[in-house]
Image 1 (cartoon, helix red, strand yellow):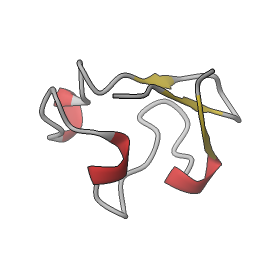
Image 2 (cartoon, one colour; image 1 turned 135 degrees about the horizontal axis):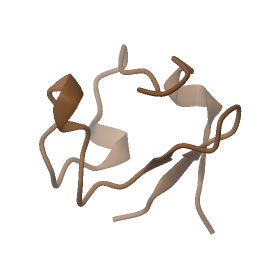
Image 3 (cartoon, one colour; image 1 turned 90 degrees about the horizontal axis):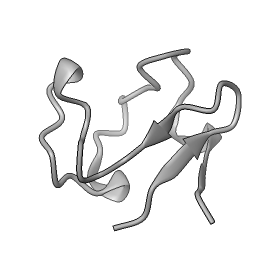
Length: 53
């Protein structure tokens, strides 16, 4: 599964880790995140993330 980077702040969403502080279990692909999920650091929406090369 691909990692995604928040363009505004640089936070990296790693699907192997998930976002447990916000109820996202490890193993959750970025594409499977809820539409209302936001960056836990800066609050950016999913459309402001880019696939990490």
